[in-house]
Length: 280
Image 1 (spheres, rainbow, N blue to C red):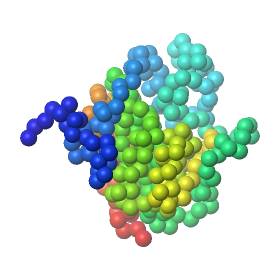
Image 2: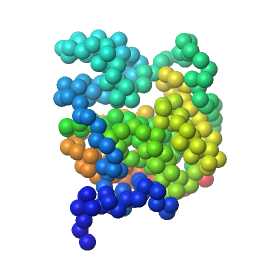
Image 3: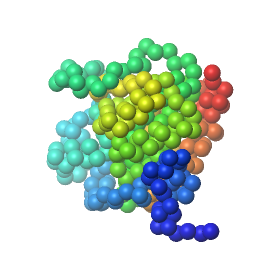
Image 4: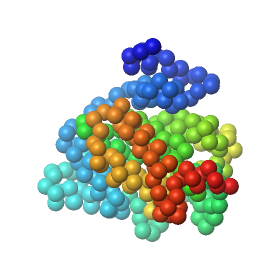
């Protein structure tokens, strides 16, 4: 039976107890983001600026708004600090620091402690990490979230969306736990999606220890930062997807390759799948 996209969207039940929204969308081959609002599109100029900044992040993740503004002006792009700050926020740009910041206003900024320092990671499902990154497309952008197992680098869950919401991140987390079991520790940054009540309650419900990076710490979540570099340089920047459907299909193929075929030097030139399915 062939159904249109709008008809397939009508089959999704947000409160269905047996399948998450992410899983229902996968089965119906539609984008989860199609169920939600479409944000006001950015101008072509702003998209070009964001795409430039996205690539620049891998070279200078320690640049703040003032340096980025100066760099863009040197490239001949007429911008001000206000615009750059807004686009940085939209892109989820997180400036990192070579040393811990000394201007922390309140201890409550750290919602949960960072549990991975000096931790020996010895087995799969001991520690998972999750993050969100900006994905440029031909005529717009979307966001990609992914969860990786730190011992094996295996991507246990991922999704794309047109908004960075706590509900979306929670859906991805639930789907990963349902498919692979639960980790002992779950690490994220201190983004509002991950400090939200709905997300942290899901972790607490599953009795998972919550770990969060220190603000501006370059190395706290380095493994998933390496994943973003691989995804973008090996797929996103080479293809430039036209729309969300093409992006989903392309990333689905890429993550199959990443998990099952891509040889990782850090894994002794084995694949994440080999390590994950043979780890203790």
